[in-house]
Image 1 (cartoon, rainbow, N blue to C red):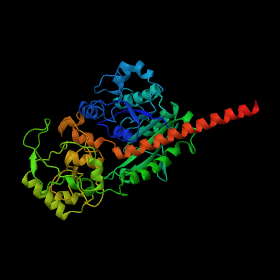
Image 2 (cartoon, rainbow, N blue to C red; image 1 turned 30 degrees about the vertical axis):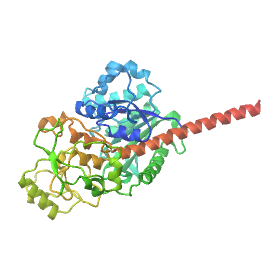
Image 3 (cartoon, rainbow, N blue to C red; image 1 turned 60 degrees about the vertical axis):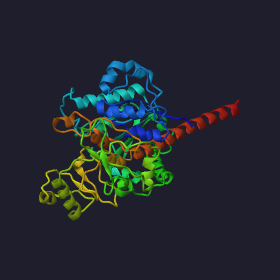
Image 4 (cartoon, helix red, strand yellow; image 1 turned 180 degrees about the vertical axis):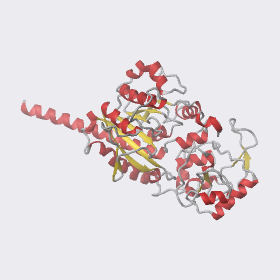
Length: 440
């Protein structure tokens, strides 16, 4: 069948793009406004010579960080020229949960971002859309595990960003529905609940058995087949994912990453121990990227050791426990060794290692997100203060990413969906031709 193409908006470092390419789709271009995140993306999808996941990239599009509004302003004509060549438009505008009801400032940057996303959809007119986001957006009600995204209430009821998005995409010619999924059920060693919205052109949706809901039946089929194909258990645990990256008993060497200050250390790598680790390490050559260890003081190490020895693992520390150990952070999870990890966030000190008194490395976070070891991260490791809202260092890139194994299953489901549409259209054409010949 056809090899389908895609473009990635708000791509970040490339988790969604990586999974879609693993499913056999071909990337055309990606848009990401943050320079650090785009450097990581470019290293893996543009600069990597001969890689199967290398993007085609239009000659007219400068290979740099772009904002979506900037791209539409300077390359609107070129984008219209791509109409009909992009099968899947991946990624969607970040949702802050703001309301579209009542009086609002039309110049609000969030409103502008929303409008520009819809403009991109209208310009490119892809066959299908896929959007991944947090499950906290307001939804009308749940039908089993499918979430109804209700359109705006003409009576003035407050509606969420997602309600408005679905309404606007419907006006642009797309049927949209969504499902809450846990990434852990797709082979990702992490409890990460996400809302997956899929849209299909209304002209194509009529060819699907069950309409847009067919997409989620195919996603479930893709999930089951993915676990079998990759040899993964129903749940991959934290130790399944990162036990080969433990530092106990391993020689430490100086971190020579040019983007890291001096005097940081990292552990030498001894090789994979589990099927998941073997999968993640496949095709990797040379030293491991982003293995730098945090420099904890002895006092911090002692505190973390007590937490690991005395606190329940796999759940967030409660207020009383945090006070006992003198912790001010509200979200701290000591990992459980035999369970999937808690949700990887953009903050490196949210999760404690299940056995060693330390936070995780960027590479360990990437493993928990299902990034393969060959994936290279660029930019500084952390940031702080006011820069947190302006910079996207490595920990943030990983925490914001779509897990590639989740994206891989989505890509396989969309490929089958578009194949089914093509087959149904071909069968209809053949039947019409046969009828015409019979009546001639």
